[in-house]
Length: 636
Image (cartoon, rainbow, N blue to C red):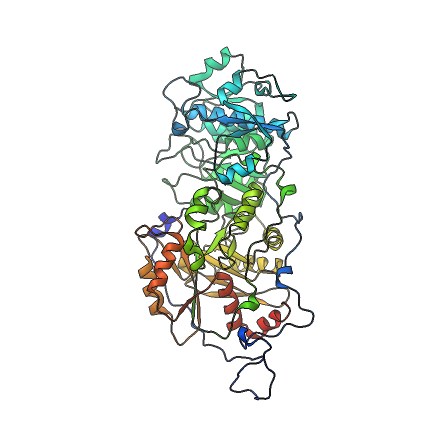
C-alpha cells in the first residue's frame, strides 16, 4: 500500500463511534434477574448465559469449510511448466540495475538487467510452450523464494544472462540446455534518450522472440550473430500499444515506472521477464514520451475486466490513487509487487498445487458473551503488498513478534493473490500464523482497488453487477476453501451506493463470512468506527466495522490514540473499535504489534483487547442477539 503520503496531507478525523447501550440479555440459563427461578439451567455456565446450547443437528465449527477445488476463483495467468531442471541466472550489476550504464559493457547497469529479464523471460516462455524441459530462475534468495525454487528440479548451473545468450552448453542429464537456440534476434533500446524504450522492448521481446539489447551494446550482439528484429529506440508507448496489443494477452498487465529513486528518466527493470513469458503488455504513466492518462485508460479498457495489474508506479511524482483508482474504475485490480521476482516460475501450475491449509480461527462458542466492556482490536496494514509478505522480513520482524500474540494483532493478507503466485508461501504463512487470535483477514478480495469505484467506468449497470458478483464469488470460494472468516476492504466512501452494493455482493456470495473490516482512502479512519449491516442469504446480519483509530508515524502515536480512545469510549456503554497499525511506521524503535502494546499500556483498564474475529462476534451478539444465538445453536 505504502500510503503515508496521502495520509500526511489528510486531516485526522477521529470522532467517537455511535454508542450502543448494553442490551438486556436473553438468557438460555444462568442467573437472569427477571426470569422465573425455576427456568432452565445453562449446561455450561462457564460460557456465559447468552450462549445457547447446541441443537441436536449442530455441526462442528471446524467443518464449516469447503473442499479445495477450482470454483472459478483463479484469475492470474498460470502455466504448466514442469521442469526437469533450471538455470540459476545470476546478476552481474544488481546494485546499478536502475541506471543506464555509461559504458558499453553488455552486462552492466540497466542494459544488463533488461537483458537478464529477456533471457529469463524467453526461456520460461519456451518452457510454457513445451519447447524445452527446463526453465530459468533469476537470482533471489530467502525462504519465501527458496521453497518455490526447490520444486523446479535440479539446478543445471549458475550463469549470467550474457553467458547464456552467447555460450553453448550441449546436453545436461540427457536434455538440451542451450538457451541461445531459443533467441531469434534482438530488439533495440536507447535507454539514455528514450527511457520508455525499455518498456516497449519488453513487449517487442515476446512478439519477436528476441533479446533486449541497448544501442550501446548492439555491436557486441551483431558480432555474436544476432540480427535486429525491432527498433524500439524512438517508439512511443502509444505506438507500441497500437502495434502490439493484438499480439499480447489481455488477462494481466505489468505496470512499472520508467522513473525510480525520484527521477523520471530511468527505466526500472522488474517484471519484464514475467511480461515476456506471459506475452503481456507493459505500461507506465510517468516518465515517457506519450504515456499519459488517456493512453492508460485505453490500455485498461482493452484489459479483460477482473485482471491483475502487477507492479507499481512512481510514488515521487503522484499519489498511488492516481493509478490505483483508474485500475479500479475499469474493473481490474492492482498488486503492489514492483520489487518481487520470478513470478512465472513461482506461479507455475498453481491451480493443481492448491494447498489444503486452513487459517487458524476461534470457535465463536468459546466466547463468554456475558462479559461486557470497551472492546478494541488491532490489525497490521499493507498485507496486500505481495513483495512485503513474500519476504523473510515480514515473518521475522512483523508476523513472528512475540507481541503479535499477546496483543492479538490481526493481519490483513492478500491471500487470494498469494495462493496463485506462490502456493507454498501461502501454506507457510498459514502454518506460521502466530495464534488463532491473530485473525487472518483476506484483504480487498483479489488485489488493491476501491470497492466503491470498482467497475464504475465503461460498464453498464448490468455489466457492473455481473462483474462485482464474479469478484465476490471467487473471493468467497477462496475464503471458504481455506477457512478465512473475515474480509478486509478499502473504499473511498463507505456511504456510497456503489460501495454498499459491492459489500452486499460479498455477503451474498459467502454464508461463511463472519464479518468485514474496512478502511477509507484517505484517511484510513474516515469511517470513524461506523458499523454497517448486510443480511446474508441465510438471514443473518453481517457487520462491516470501519476503522476508528490508527497508529501512524507523525499523525497518530500510540499515546495519542490511547488518549482519544479513553476520551471517546464511555465506560457506561459497550463499544467495539478497531485500530490500524501502519506497517511502515516506527515509534521510538517500536513498530507493528510492539506499537500496539504501547497503545494498550495507555488505555484505561475498562478496555478489553480481543481478536478481530472475537470483536465481530461480540458486536453481533450485542446488536443482533437473537439471530446470533440462533446461529450459535447450529454449531458445536
